[in-house]
Image 1 (cartoon, rainbow, N blue to C red):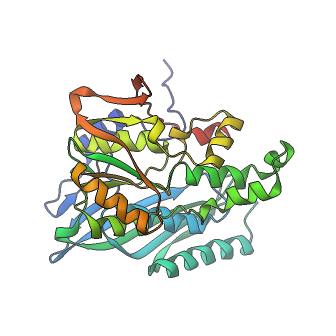
Image 2 (cartoon, rainbow, N blue to C red):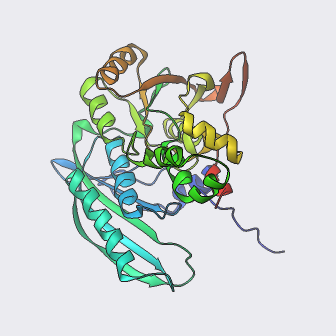
Amino acid sequence: MEEKTLPLGKLNMAFLADLLGRYAHRDPRVVVGPQVGEDTAVVDFGDRYLVAKTDPITFATDQIGWYAVQVNANDLATSGAVPRWLLATLLLPEGKTTERLVESILAQIHDACEELGIALVGGHTEVTSGLDRPIVVGHLLGEVDKDKLVKTSGAKVGDDLILTKGIAIEGTAIIAREMAADLGRRGYAASWIARAQRFLFEPGISVWREARLAIATVPVHSMHDPTEGGLATGVHEMAHAAGAGAWVDRRRVPVLPECAELCRTYGLDPLGLIASGGLLLAVAPEDSTRLLAAYRQAGIPAAVIGRLVPSEEGLWLRDGGKASPLPRFDQDEITKLF
């Protein structure tokens, strides 16, 4: 009998959790090891923790080097760490790679590192067969004081779920950049397409600023950067890590107008669209008002979109008087286009 192949996108959470439980290496200095829902690995380095993250960029081609730095820095930000050292692996397509392309990617990496105070300390580059586009894999290391570490699993039953800025910033930027010609043929104005393309920078896919502000304002139980699989999958991951359930109020989720328009055009669900740029936080209800006020003063939109509940209550999406199981998108909605 022919073995079934796995679909495009993230591995099934239960399958991955089982694999990590059986094959993860045990080391007493590992504070946070490989776990579904945790954004980073954490190792005890004596007076502080070393925080490590690796993430590839596989959907985007435009500004791919800049993307790679930002998405890895986002995950370090969710742990409370300061990013320090980056290694980058560049896998480049045979027959399509020029010296100009390689230099442009490295220049993007350099510029993003300069912006965040990160040192590019090594990596690997090669032209390889079987690729139709460049792939950049970032490996980022940072540091955090031991009493400042934030873990995804730190979320608590009863916590409010707060989302900054809205969804889906990254997905909107990627679609506008990769599908610009098609959007033009569909009658979208060049100025509209350009505005959606600029979502990469404004409102931006970085969550560094809002993560640091949250830590400075209230006791943050958990932070998570929803990437592939969108906000809905991000909530699933946070709840799984914390051993909790959750409900999300669909009407409270801020869906950016350009995102909503592109999702209507291409038949996508914004809840499952790659969502870097919106930070998901879990804080005690008594701290929500203070955090939202700090965000408002800083000009960062934010909203309470749901709450964590006991695990036996499950994960639910409320829409007015109706409730349905919160969907999980192991295959990001953007894969329907590429």
